[in-house]
Length: 82
Image 1 (spheres, rainbow, N blue to C red):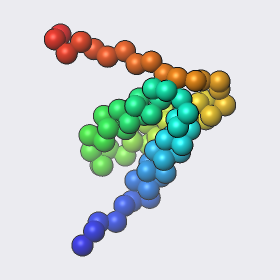
Image 2 (image 1 turned 135 degrees about the horizontal axis):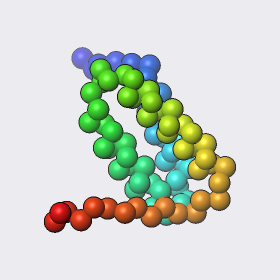
Image 3 (image 1 turned 90 degrees about the horizontal axis):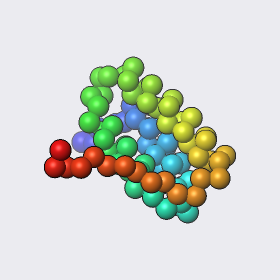
């Protein structure tokens, strides 16, 4: 039997889809979004305060991305040898 998603999980999935739609024509943005969501997927479901904080932060970032003239995103990565 398939487990049902909580209301918050559904909201996060919708937010992720909205980010992907906005990122469609912006090089590097999709990869950055996927990376951020993957990293935050490790947060325990019971850490609701942290999830809600990140959700609100992401909503503000999405709004900024939609309104701005951002055309691409560059990401600095830590050297794996360190």
